[in-house]
Length: 113
Image (cartoon, rainbow, N blue to C red; front, side, top):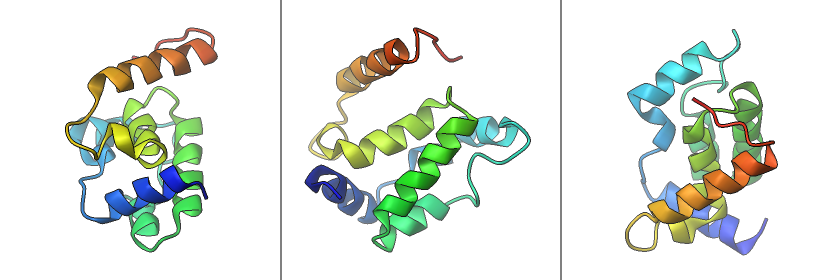
């Protein structure tokens, strides 16, 4: 596990609110292809708190495969992989916009709803 990922997992475990718990994110997850985009609500969070970062990341990536347009899940992954954009001072929304453009370009320019 990389140093930034460990730092992001640590910041997350200190009690930051998981982004996907927002009402919009829950509605999107509920619509995800018949199967829930998460095994159980909060399971990825629990895995991070337990220090099982690789497992949490794998679960988020599975959720992302079910619902690639869910930017809340993208943000959860980014927060662990790039904690400096989320936990060091103010949240860096410009970085998030740039990251979103990079990921959209990598996916062939498809912009999720």
